Amino acid sequence: MTIQWFPGHMAKARREVTEKLKLVDIIFELVDARIPQSSRNPMIDEIIQHKPRVVLLNKADMADKEVTAEWIRHFKKKGITALAINSQAGTGLKQIVAEAKVLLAEKFDRLRSKGVKPRAIRAMIVGIPNAGKSTLINRLAGKNLAKTGNMPGVTKAQQWIKVGKELELLDTPGILWPKFEDQEVGLKLALTGAIKDAILNLEDVAVYALRFLEENYPVRLEERYNLSPVPEDIVELFDKIGSARGARISGRETDYDKVAELVIRDIRGEKLGPLSFERPSVPAEG
Image 1 (cartoon, helix red, strand yellow):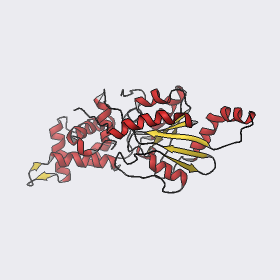
Image 2 (cartoon, one colour):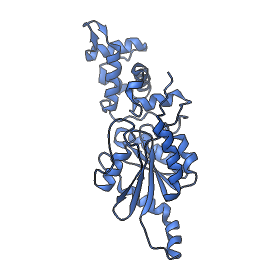
Image 3 (cartoon, rainbow, N blue to C red):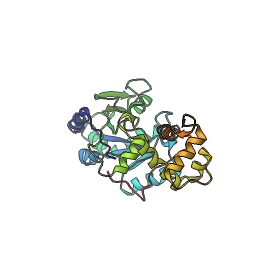
Image 4 (tube, rainbow, N blue to C red):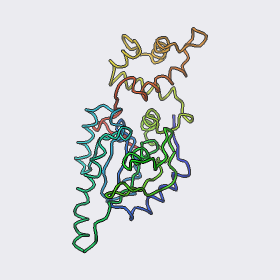
């Protein structure tokens, strides 16, 4: 399965991000804590170059805490500050400005020594679609200033937003790269909702999810769908889940489309608990 999604506004967004880079002091790179590598846009490193940055591991409540801690250590080894946050609930947001101040202390000290009056930190938020940028901005600002939605592609224009006296944010549309060299990256993005379901084969996504759960979270998989043991054959596995959850056609045959939908919905709805789909020891390549 080849997953590609690169609407025209995203190509425009890349140009705009590049053009506006000189206006900001720091980059806040928002990624999905469940897939920190796969939800990092490879273009971002190329675009922002040596700008200071903070990687924000959003939706951390939906991710495996131990794995998230591994990712934070991983980024630290690379000289990048990473923070676990939950923009929906507002958890961990106070750390963002504090870390930005630390990273920019030297720059602002130089400005003060030249007689420049203190000003707010100017930051640009970047990330792939549906990473939660608008929700984060609204939480930081304490107002509904940015459009939000649970569908990728909601934000399509740039806007400056003041966050108190200490921070000014430049929101940007979500940017997704034009082609996934590693199709597993596309499957992870599809599973976590970064790509519109309408353009996907959900059965392929569900097969990937079930195989991953079988290998990494077998007990949760067994308990959720009353499996003992988990069938090795994927068709049999679909049949068992279909039987357990009433996903049948005419009461007899398994409705495979329905099984795929409910597995994906269960994962996104945290019915199998907090899950992380990649570890820093086994990084995905985009």
